[in-house]
Length: 257
Image (cartoon, rainbow, N blue to C red; front, side, top):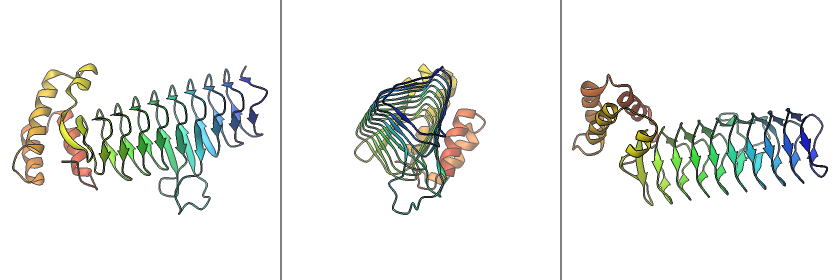
């Protein structure tokens, strides 16, 4: 059985799973679906067509699924979709999509720390850590296992690759390839996130080849197109290197330098 505090407002039409806890003065809109064993603290607001999975913990004063901060938004029927086992801390804001992607989506097992902001049409993968006061602008993609330090700001339409580590206070205005460690008032590549990769069980041989590919892309005097060709010829059969190169080739905004 779910446990809903007597002061909470759960509008007719909301779907509440088994074992859900809803705290005092929380407001749950009529189009919201909340999965089993999710805990919602006091004063949380969840609105719009929002689907939240199982075993999430949402702390006080979070706001999820409200209208996006986009002047072009005209009330289109868009969604917010959140997976399982996420921790969403105090005062986090997650806005629903626009008619670009039609949804804002967060995967599983992510930690969004206090005061972080996930704007409209953001797509976030799994196992990410979004530290305090991080701001993700609209249409940003954050891939699996990315870690964004406190007060990082990511420009709209940027893509953050898997296993990236962004230092606190960084401003990101271009794509960050997977496995890269970056920081700066205009974020630049500082090397590879070798410690993070080691902790996640990457083979040393894969990391060694990736380091060679990274040097070719970032440290050689070749043009980017030329360095990509050389990396593909020398190391392209390695899956980790291939992921790195394919991300760069697919980048629309260009990659950080």
